[in-house]
Image (cartoon, rainbow, N blue to C red; front, top):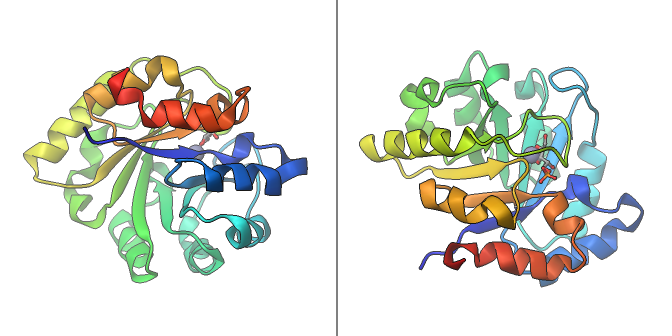
Length: 220
Ligand code: DX5
Ligand code: ZN
């Protein structure tokens, strides 16, 4: 049975103990560290950027999954790649020249990801599928951790899975927002390959075990 990829989201870590939390992620079965960049314009919140990415890169042994919730991401792709991003997700809603943006991300040696807001249909990706390594389905409105999962996401993932199969596309489906043990199994059942988890990991009594449980949630 193929296990899902798990990406704990740094946004929910204890920023006063970031090294401790990164060491926990290093010891865990997590596959990536998810790194949320918010600019206060595309989303109504500001998180963190290059200096933290460079610091995290020194301690984090997992590849870094950078989620850019920023306007005009093209301006910053080189710097995020240099700072240590392994995957870079841009938002569909911020990229008028998505084909060019995704091509550039790959040229920089990173995996190319596209994030879709809850209201953005999956059909818009049809003409750039060859340029995409991973599609990030937002299951909350981006901007904050700890929000409730939007149930409609399940049918959206199922539609996306159909679209990928119909086009013989091997891009992965990643889900971000309100993911926990209570919905992980259902998400994997409809086609998700990768789960981002913030509060359900860092807010757990035993974060290592929370990651283990998510990693094994296909069986549950
Ligand atoms: C929300 C971010 C998420 C967030 C998820 O805009 O993109 O990555 O950290 O946090 P939880 O899992 O707590 O919803
Ligand atoms: Zn995110």
